[in-house]
Amino acid sequence: MNVDMNAMKAEIGGAFVLSWMVFGMGLGTLEGAVALAVVWMAFSGAHVLPVVTWSHMMTGDMGDTEGNWMANGMRLVAQAVGAMLGILLATQFGDVGPDWEATDMWLPDIAETATIWSVIGMIAAGAVWWQVHTRCNSAWASAFGLMVLGGAMTLSGAHNMGASIASAGDGIVDTLVNWVCDGLFVGLGAFVGAKIDENL
Image (cartoon, rainbow, N blue to C red; front, side):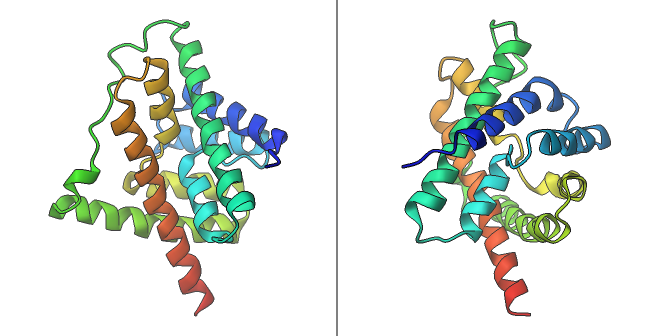
């Protein structure tokens, strides 16, 4: 497998900046959206957020194991590494502290009504946001779209993975499942949105 080292460096750098500086602002705020747009422009070509990578995976060639699944899987790993480095710098390579606590795995609650509606919300947000992201071709439009729709998505997946790794694997299983599922459902929404757009 050929690994695009420039893409990996951009993912690590972008995720590093997000975890080090931007997540404190909150991506649902004006400041966070502006910062995210600047990160996307500075680290050109980087997805930076797992939901973006999952959207690329789900709308790419599903049969292309190496060019789609493996390449984007490596981007997800690079994002977690970058986030971990940002967290370690922010904590001066010390204790991640009480500000971060591993969240419980939400997948076992999938049969509950509130969880089902949350998943439907992730899919819908992914469908709408992917249209904004791909049609506007603008870091600003994409970032502001996430600011508006981010409440229905988990945008801190790489940050949470990085924090879990930096905490010597605290809550790693629950965090890993959430990291995958949160991105997968948004990516599924991107896929649905792209298919609807193709058939209109």
